[in-house]
Image (cartoon, rainbow, N blue to C red; front, side, top):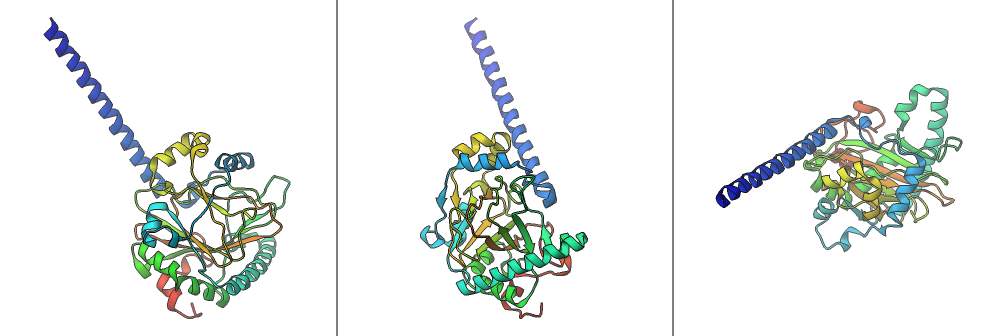
Length: 328
């Protein structure tokens, strides 16, 4: 009798083990399918979700003030390895302060011109501006966030070339999987005026096994804690469980999450993996915060260029922008 009972128990334990293995396999398959679906969606169908102003503010409260993002040279790692592990690095002095200031003036003038042109002809909207999260702090408030597609004019190209001919360009060549052949898919300016509300936490391209895009934000003036610095959640770009928990229980996830903020001097740059969870914080200062944004494709990414003025007619690669003159 004891032998029979033992055998029956073994069968039950074996069945439980099989059931658990099947369940884990099913969950793993579902997560893999989810990653494939997300990775193949057009950018417009991926997050950022339409967080409410209240939710976005709660995101910031749960995350706290965050730690300043350290300079890449202080991490004790090869630059490309630091980016691979953390998903974000800060590169000081990527652009001269004078060049940053001149470009900032140009951007704000170009934004004013573009807004006038779009108001007169709404069909120009997609040629001048890109959708951005949390454009207004409330339904009654004026617009305080924009993403402006930058024209390929000498002042812009000179700044791009200076950035790419230094450590930023070297890091992008090492990280995109195709060196100087990496294709530009975003050349824009991110503008947050005084009173801009914080954004909700999001990633730009969803979770995927391989990298998709690498974005570089270059500060065109100092970015202090009250000017809406970008907040990053390091290592989330390679952590599917972090994305899953954020999707299912964002309050619990953010309460426990570690974050760093991009406090920058004029000309400093942050480079980050598009899968990384991040957001713009609120601008409570009296100064408009302007960042130049350069985004390049990883070799494995086949999605569209989504924020280059002129759209698909302008196919520019990293090497073009480093070495070609102003006749692009």
